[in-house]
Image 1: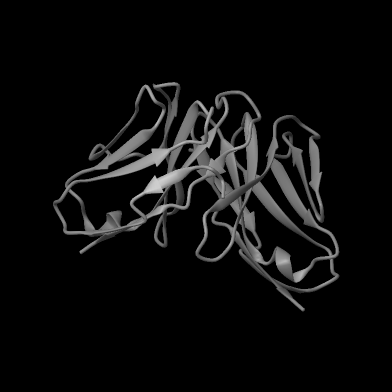
Image 2: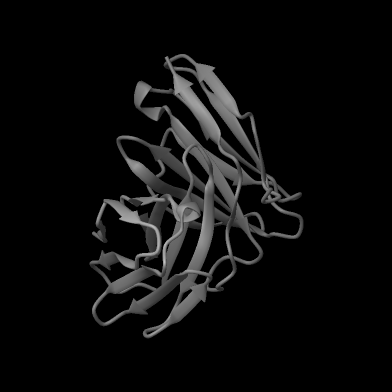
Length: 108
Length: 115
């Protein structure tokens, strides 16, 4: 059965710092997604990664995919308070499986 | 505003009852996805429809069913409700779905409380 593990599950960091969220999955997959969820809100799609070595960037967020290592990373550069949210990765393997989410709190 | 609408926003019902959640996708989107989010189970993918046909199935219980109508709106039917069905139910839509890379746009969700 496909398993998706995110770490860390909680992260508190200072503004201006860099950090990385990791998403490991157990089986070869067609697609990997990253989502953002603000407290009490719905989800927002951030990135869809398809192929090995894929890298996508949007503002201070950059996502990458290593299919051989079954690992995706979401890198945050020079964090700002507005990036505080819960970030989910999800892997598409005939059905979509989500990680538990990483709750990110950025301190001003 | 994502352009995806869900009704109702909140639903309170009793165990054993049946409810219907409705989702209208963004104009032009052919694919609809249903998700469940609860504290116990986290985020779970339930089912995907593409242009009226079931495309992928996730952890959808047999007590649950869904369909996508010719006008592309979708309904999720939950029957014989149990306390554990209390959750947020999101739908999302995308232009094509399937093997494409198109973005999913999420609705605001329906919060279901089963008493």
